View 1 (cartoon, rainbow, N blue to C red):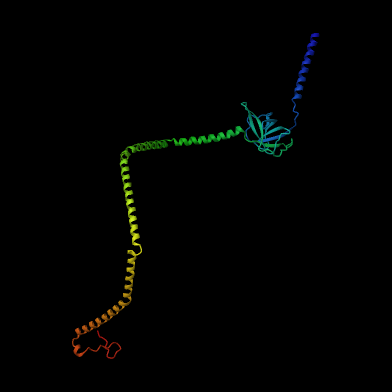
View 2 (spheres, rainbow, N blue to C red):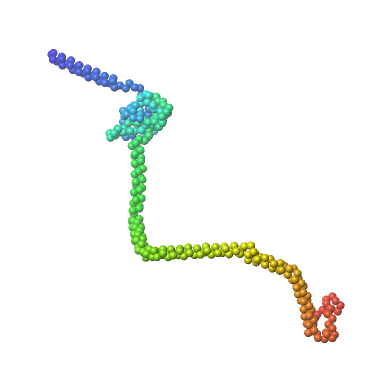
Length: 315
């Protein structure tokens, strides 16, 4: 009986010690910090996020995920209710995104702020403030990966079009043309070889021509100098040009006198001679027509219209 009583007392003591340890652990682990409720409203997928998930503000743990449920007022929208420690600087520019812990795939809510110094975001249990959810790294990679895949598909389609049978034939023809052009260019040095061989002789002829031109230029320079000396001698005072100028002046004076004095008399005499010749011509003509006019005189002229004795002609 005594052994049984000792065993019973030992059992009670063990159970009491275990319960006391549990109570002490709960008391030590109780959340003594006050929390503020917030909500995240999103239509994005939230893989790996579960209730009691961690909420971090720029890497510091500041709260927990209380619940995840569908919005009863808007179909397809998800509500994520958070409890964030009081004193966390949640402002009007704070936003949330999903982060993942290592390779486990367990998600947590990452809070960040677009800028510092924004006013704090007020919230209370009856009307919890809402924090916008921005796409996380995985979502961005997924979106950009899809865009990259679409571009890769378009590039692949373009390559398929480029490598079609028709384009392959065109490329082959282009390569053939390039080969022919390369062969033609390879023959050009051989064709130019005779011309290149004649270049030294041509250079010698050009040198000789240049020497001849230099000699001709020197001769022309001497001739020009001779012409200069001749021009100086011609233009010297009392020289040929001055004497010729004086002679031309005298000739001009004589010509002026001739035009002003002699020529008018000559012209007058010419006019009188012309008049006399006309009178002689008329006299000779009249004698030829009527020789009797020498004896009887010239006949009286016929009366004209309006004169006495005028008789109009008849047909």
